Image (cartoon, rainbow, N blue to C red):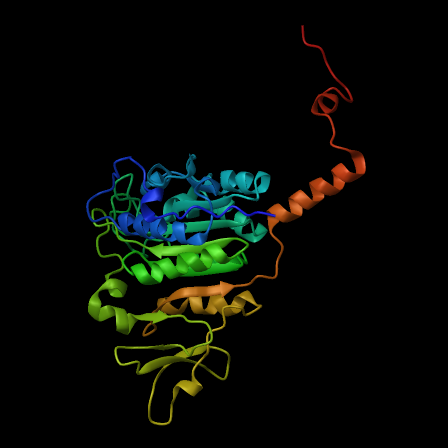
Length: 342
């Protein structure tokens, strides 16, 4: 038996001849660069990748990836990606979407794709604004956010994309940041290795219509104080000098504690991405919404004990074919009551 070695691919193999047209300084460039760098490392033939998108700045992604691609309509990318993965489970399907595309008009498609555990890798670019249509508030914009469509402040409470994904019981949920290139690449690799739905929120800057949306996370001095990097099997420590941590309280809540004076890393929560109950990751996802708590990044949940939607569907098809034969579409269409239209 002989085996054919896969060709050695590089980042350049995944770049196209299309001019990349985002605003100068847009965070999308960093995300594109990270994806193009990670794909060659996955050991998958280039022709087995499919990149699907909806509508928005992020949805130009398929044009810039030298793979198969599908630019769909607003909010419907999860439905199209589900169809591709179901009919061709052998393909590696990635979905590029934005906070508006995925959580507003595409909200229902997103949650049902995740609950079904379709083997799709979802990259949700979150800049807290509608950038393509020039600065209207989005489902993730802050409460009282003043924008072109909310001149007196947004009356809506924003969606938390991580909470939404965990609430839909997605089996892999993670968060990274456009400018944290090393962390972003590691997160993408972890998502690629997951066999079910993998949801990655990427905090991304829109320097034209919402510049500084994540400065509290990305600025040099802020990173150590305001960011908690979740690492499986390690205590939750953060702070410039690693002097703060997250501890479980007696009533099951969580709190920020100062290390020292009798409090050590042994008293802190140890992160478990394989926790069987989604409430664990859900609690972590609300951390940054509480005063004094950091913004967690990394893998929140990686639960690999549910079957993939595409596997279940194709097993059903195979079972029916084995029992009744392959079937005949013409006979099916001409069976039962039919009418001849003259």
